[in-house]
Image (cartoon, helix red, strand yellow):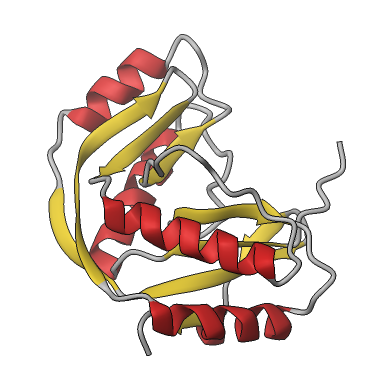
Length: 181
């Protein structure tokens, strides 16, 4: 299957949180989990989409939307899972996350992008392992990760525009855009 998606929008958490997820990812690789580990640690706000526009043009669109939004506080605490296919560091869901995701999606859609606008609340999370978790290792991985507690409060004050690079995703410093500015 060919993936024609060119961009997605996410939030890059602060370095202390990224280090925890990167450490968890590295540890999980010993058990065969590598899917998505080449993508920087992030919370997905607008899932991958295909665009004919350049990264610059998409950033211009986002820069027209972001001043309408305000930064907010959020919290990461503990681990969760989606069935036995994904293990993640849990980000506290809130109306702020929903508003950010939906406003970005609707704004991009209004500018002609083919993005999916979800009708359900966003489940913000930081993926540690997904898709390639060996079925016989899931319980062990989840209980091992859950046994060490981690909690942090942080400010969501920017979004990052990721772009396709080969088979992976990349975000450059100039692709991190401030909310409310």
